[in-house]
Length: 315
Image (cartoon, rainbow, N blue to C red; front, side):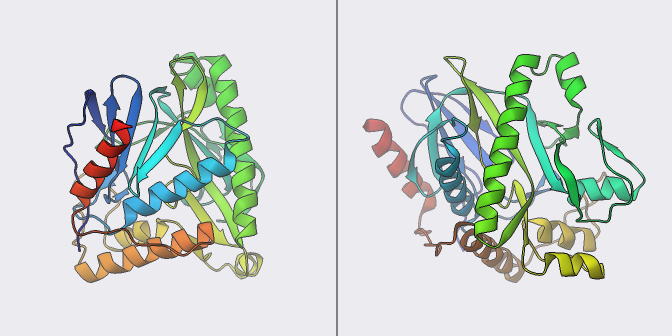
């Protein structure tokens, strides 16, 4: 099935292009950013060899819906979505940190806890917790933003400010926005029968110096969701939580002896497995948004995107 895993567009007044793990961002006239959500799949900070059909469309459309649902709380970079895989927004100077916020002890936090660590990014985690327990209050555990091929690294609030990665006055705003977005995201999730477990937000500054939300928000790539129904029962029995996130991909990779460590090889993903991953992403979309997913035309994704973006830029 057709996927888009790489782009080489040359739009009018294009100044540069930045290729991240899953998104490619085109700078138009140092004024606009055209962000293409590809079908690349990243896990353990490694991009998998094959794309996942519809993944880029799913991420882009969830992020768009969530930005619209939170714009009354936190300003964002988004202007338009001229194509299912494309978002156009204001050029921003992005902060070099990802604002990770955790309501529950899952994923990376649980892995650290299991090896005996009780501090994560300078934040204390209470004794006596089990994996997937709820924290008394959500904790912010930032990470430095890595280039493609490198690993994001945990960092404390104190180090971010001390090293001058983010000015203290700006960081206070980032923390405030992060908590507000997580609260709203948790409310939206609850209305869908879900629990927003943890997520990450990225922010930038516009030319006017305004701090805005950029990139994605509340997608299955940036967030972990549990099904609320049966959550407590599963915790009480010590059972794994039923979740909506790309954690199922990470678990499959771990089961196939891959965690992105040196010397490890990415296991072969069969077409049948890729089809199941695509189906899971569609399930994620429909559960998170409460809407039926409408598949975009895959016959020539590159042409479709190029035509839609050019038509938008002409306007």
